[in-house]
Image (cartoon, rainbow, N blue to C red; front, top):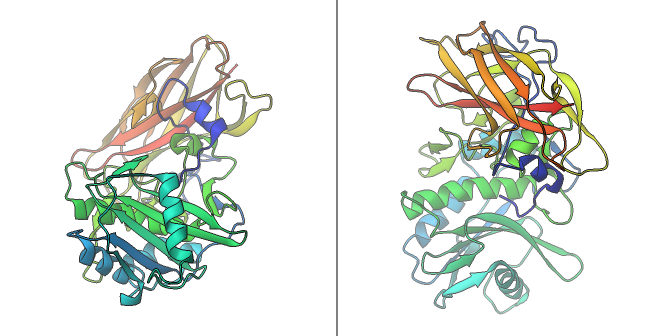
Length: 404
């Protein structure tokens, strides 16, 4: 994910590490996209802020001496841009095929450092790019440098990222950092290519993360979706899903991460593509209203789709069950304050699921009671409703509650 954070929305997460909210189908009516779905989902759209994108990327793969996966990383970079995966995940945003090849393979001949931090990595990259004798390919603005930091190196901060570094007044260099030590229970190779598929696509669609934003953040009406993720680029918003990872095809035989598709989301299908073969199912909050809320101690209000609930009062929220194909059995819904992957620790809402099971076309309900807000907490609270069918990946919808 990018190093960028959305400060005002981060305040919405007070009391939980991450949080969520949602708008619902504005008219509560039948879907006009997704032929089977009984209700039209109201899902956020990731928008462009007008900054440049890299429409014909050139991938430069950088590894250090002795990396056992160097050849695989180079092969991955060479095949990614012509693959069906790349087309499925980036073409709707105006990104064309990416290219690479032997001339864009950099193997650093020295031993990797024992430790390196982000600022030192920035400086090192600029030094290599601007040194005519470094052996690196000559810089051009379409290049995306993908630096694989080996497991023996302690990276600070840890984990994958994409960044932007400047060289002089005019050279903006977007690059990807892959922390090979950040692999958990997976193989180093699988975790690295999953992270690279995520970060390279985000770099193409939003390369100037510090100076001139492009595709990042949800539209203004969907404050809830923005707050659930804080960083909202096309990889970030899919990475925590149960079905986040997918095996590439014969043209890209590596482990990959699904990425957000505005088109698929708007059509009532799985918003993270390439979509799994199983039906996509979820619930749509019905008859939401525009809620004006104050986040933390903000002087001005933010607005988004949600529901108003008076302090000490309650509201019953109707939810339309929908799926984009027939389901064999009903699914159940649960609701938490905060996000589905990180519930809130302090309970500003009391939540009761009244009708919590259904299939396409059914209507469920949740009753929300607003408790007293803590001083300085503002009046915005996030709630997430999660749908879970037996043996299938879960799906979630965030909902914004404004308390008064």
